[in-house]
Length: 196
Image 1 (cartoon, rainbow, N blue to C red):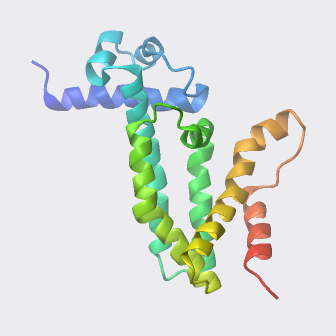
Image 2 (cartoon, rainbow, N blue to C red):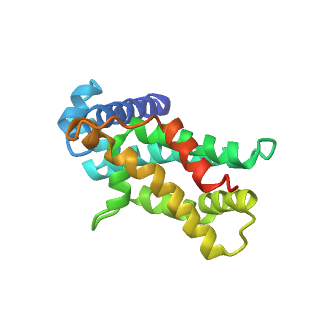
């Protein structure tokens, strides 16, 4: 009889192997066979713990998205000036994206069969994440209108995340050197928040 801790360890081993594989090869390359090989288990065990490739990917995405959720806690640190909080949040958020470059485009696309974890993350953004970002922007700008705060948040996200999505194409195909994220953030904040 398998001990519950042993079962949990096996499941975590398979999930860790999946995360490692996604980080190196991307979502589309995942197969149950490859994950079984990488986790030193077998196809039957992967199917036993996850049921299907879709369930395995969904759980892997949930783990990755939890990394995003932790970045929002930075916005709660009112000991930091709001501009520093927002910059640190964006830097940490992008750090997770850099680990899993396909993730952002996958979340944005979501396709016709969205993963449960994506839906949960969308709910989290609406309940916890977006209000924290908007509150920080409100502190920075004094803006009161919710529609304008939402538009400002989307503009900031777009200005940071679009280059992150496009950088592999621009750097390899167009041979464009993308400024560091820190440089991009400094320029954005200088233009967006430092009004003379």
